[in-house]
Picture 1 (cartoon, rainbow, N blue to C red):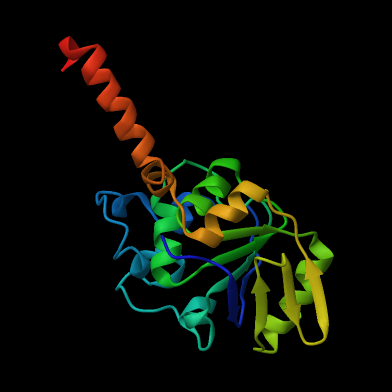
Picture 2 (picture 1 turned 90 degrees about the vertical axis):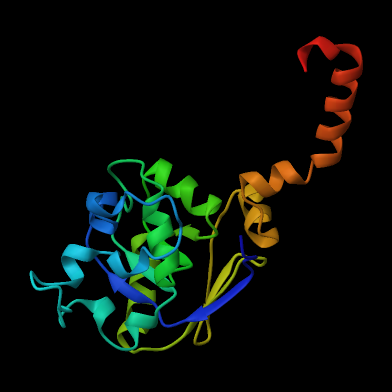
Length: 199
């Protein structure tokens, strides 16, 4: 998992509330267990018409938003089923940070496990960021300082210290386990010595 510290970009604004995981990545694309290649199917039913052609009115089909790494959304983002393909698709598209008034719990935790920073802000602060999205101006997200910088303004955000540390150091569940590989090996060796019948 890539380390996350400072992210700069023009945010894309999808103001819809209750965007569920089936809208993020429809069920027909869940056959793969690979984390790559899903970005082209992100928001599939909103991005493409029946012939598979881009719907020009959809924001993520427009410049510069088709290259956005920051997504502004309505509340309760990521609700619905707990499919991990949803953060996979977002990350494969290039989205590394999502800012919303609220997230579905499972989706929120899955973001951290896949290198995406979900930020919870109140509606008033999100409205300020939407103005920058419409003006097509960059904002900066500094995870270490827990701040969003735009123009001469600053917005602070809260984040769980453990989750923050995992993102900054690029640690998913597997990487955290591997950090304890010496202790695991030591335990296994003792187990082989004391309870050899188990092996």
